[in-house]
Length: 234
Image (cartoon, rainbow, N blue to C red; front, side, top):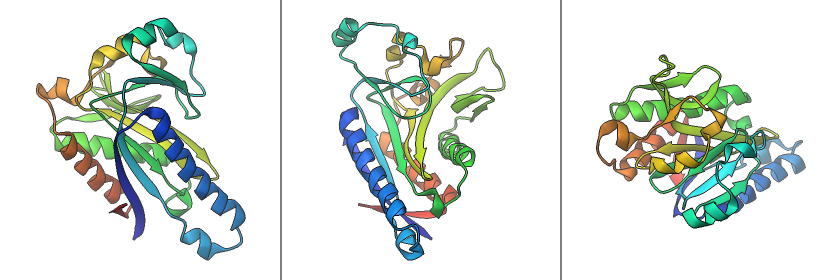
């Protein structure tokens, strides 16, 4: 069974976590580039899963539109929210306290070389986790992420945003699951560029704060199950 090194980075600025992700990502890509004729070296290449929680920040994906940020730089400073353009897919989203953010840095040669299947697997990890807490979630056709009531367009609301980058079948970035998130932060953006759908959290849906550690534990269980791997704490 494949080993994946796990680390919970705790509460960490977005840019600092991005630097750590990027370093691991570049290491894996470099090993693949320089050892493409040495299968044993590639098999021993490591994979990672990082969890963290960020101070308030908006991030814009490479296919996003700045017009979906509804406030200017001065207002961002008043609100205490950072802003970064990043190299993941997708549009604008929010990261902040009360979220479980997951960053898998995986060499998909070790699992399956199919980005669509990879995204659906990440979604399924979150769907199974929400089910454990009594929330029935699913997918909204044409929209990445995890949704509640996706079968009813008038009620569908996003509970987990996703966006990834992949190069040479190595991944980075990942998901942001709203657990006890202050949803007012979403008032200043058009989340993921979708104008007619709401955003929600586990706390809002369940009517009480949720234990973040319990959520992380269940995400880890489902990650290990769906990727057929052992998570080893670094």
